[in-house]
Length: 502
Picture 1 (tube, rainbow, N blue to C red):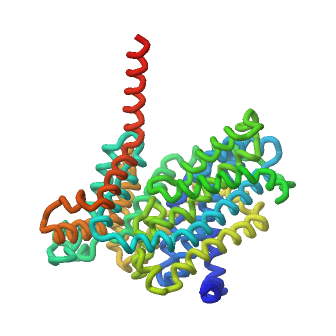
Picture 2: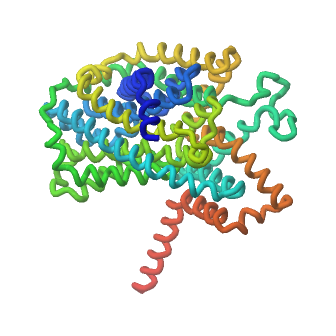
Picture 3: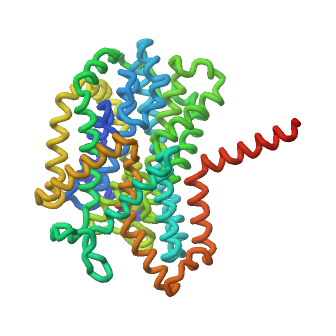
């Protein structure tokens, strides 16, 4: 099987696709104001007409490249290209001010590669084992897993859980648009036959993420461009070597483990992992007082941590068909368009497709290293691209992508509508990830709910009498409201301590 995987994954066409994805990811990730979700959403429009394997390689290459690309502007202009590079700023920019921009970028590249490869290896060995367990669960458990995914998405709203709940409910409502899958009745179509097939998830995401982001960029395009020029630091060639990185092996191992665990938990992501790894590195380092002043170890911890989530986030998506965040939701949508249904059947059908994808992720991280070493100076100049040039180009790409999804101008209208909806949601602090995850999970959520109720004769008790289902539901609630639970426990302890003092 290994020979078949290599022969399918490492064709000239697939290798070129991988490298194209990496380059696009780095380029978009290095542009301030553009998120990693934006990068993957825009590149998604290029996958139409590709076979499923090449399309996934393009998206995964963009994912991995964008995760590293955000560190370029974080180091050179003190502005993270993506939110995942927020912790890289702490030591990356001070290093650049000291004339060590090349060293900081080299450290970020090597740490990103190590973290990404570690996560890809874990995916390759752990995902098939998880898939075997998935074969034992039924519709009630799948429904509970959908609830878990929804509540995890709602938890990304932070303290304002109500807005997250409204956003998720809106996503679920929009997933019901079109003909009912069982009875064929019309739902929320308002007489428009073009909605018979429902809302296309890819179009919705392209509008909600990409077009929304462009609208916000257009608001302050001139001032943002001036700020970038003011902060820019000159690129200086690196003197850092691989053996210099080996002295940070404990930090690399710790950050890889933490990032992989965090990545496998729905609702988290690279930004959370990077912050966690950075704090742990500072706590364990003998040079803790140098963190924030230009410490290479700080860059290593942050970049290794955020890239270590890339493979782990694929575990729940490939084995359960449950997206852990907005990025894997986009990839799940791309697979659905290709007629591929993620889940345990991918591993039990004997197809090597899923293994070729997981092995390809490992190869992509190797190409990331090679591209970074060869083209580091060119990638550093990406931060000089004016936003006044980027904005109209991105709008044109979004509209072309929307048209390509359905070959009709109606999809462009849906794209614009979701762009405006996303703009209003962000303007009034409503989180967008619960909306998109609700859209992706809506069909799975509804189908397994109805199947479960048929099995139980219409009784909801089926969800509470099956131990695994009940356990997942309890964990979902605990996970979603963990900050509130911790706050309540802290108050109880404080009140008891006060009573004891009296």
